[in-house]
Length: 304
Image (cartoon, rainbow, N blue to C red):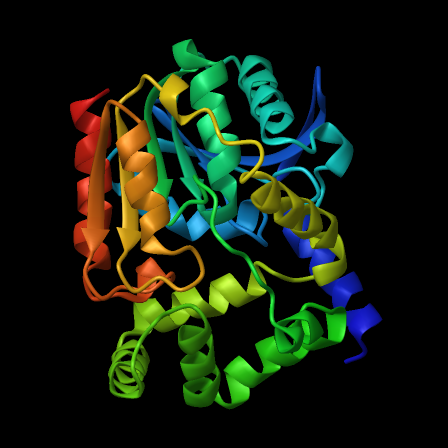
């Protein structure tokens, strides 16, 4: 199928599973599931509301609701809704106003971390607790390899999805290698573990799909990269976060190094650092994923 035809077929499916509502900051795409108390999921880079859907299942099972949003520049949320983390935080506070929801748990994943931190700092009365999962929270060197830039094109992303379907072991191994600091032996071991675990393999498939269609996520991705690079000169307001905060990170994370989490923990007064030994950036394919999810839901319940 041609890329243009494939995109035309895919977009209606994405639009059918979400709603778009007008707020005082602009139109925002979201999916609301179950009832209060709610977890507001701020997805990673790249992503969209669809990336957060499967990650909210553990909260739904624990009796909580979920609000999965597309951050500005992703899918049906225009980049004009907010380019800076502060603007995005205010936009999602406006979304809560529109939905008549007073308070939420905020979960920031990876590139959603800056927005989550600003939300907690700027709207403390709207946040019961903050979850930072492999999140960008302090400055670190960021470098996108040339080969990765090739993949971040409509054709490259489509080929990546096709490769995952046709050559699962090779593709999964390459995905894990790029996001971890594993030795060759560890890499083979983790790859084999994922292939034996249907839930982990399904997660990687959904994660790949949540980067597509690339054209409809590219503005958000490019803006996120600028935000991440700006953190060095414009530190995030970690000292202003007063709510209970859980910081979760893998010690073998290559994408967002673990020292980022350690520094955030030192700056957020009411925080807990939960590290996953030998886990890479893709925490949800680790054997300890279920325990991580339980720890998150227990933390949220304890600070409700």
